[in-house]
Image 1 (cartoon, rainbow, N blue to C red):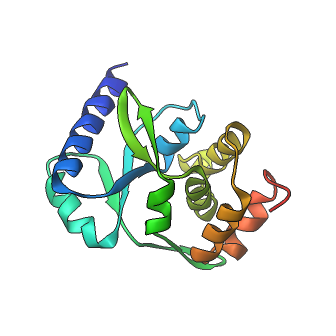
Image 2 (cartoon, rainbow, N blue to C red):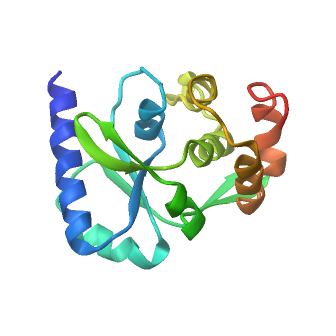
Amino acid sequence: MQRHEALRLKLSIIEKRLKKAGVRWVVFAGAAAHCYGSRREMTDIDILVKAVDLEKAKTALKDIENLDIVADLEISTSQGVCRFFMDDEMITRTRWMQLLGVTVPVIPVEDNIVFKAILQREENQGKHDIEDIKCMTKNEKINLEYLEKRIRKCQAERRAKPLLRLFIPTI
């Protein structure tokens, strides 16, 4: 319970500081998966911002430890380089949800699924991407048109689609 309280406090500080700094942001990765039904232990908070706001976000949160703040990721995979980024379309689909008792902007479920399908890390690597995809697709209604669009935007067709077909056969 102490870990959750520490994460809750950190999340509250993040929310207040980024709001004050005028930074648009979303919680993504494992914390977002938690919002979308994963019940595994949350260990950290990952924040996605637009590239133009990255330095402003890092400055506002410079004293917060164990926090990943990212923008415009280029992820090398065996199927090529995939991109993952925040854009205006993602922002319009962002959901405000409760996470550890703090209301925060959460990445759309489809975008989080794409992110985790690009990485495809498993428990033996200390990560839970595939497990999280399974939970999110089971617990949430997925907008297939938007999911397909995001896969294309991230240049992740070859990487993500074969895995996602295991959980969403119609993709």
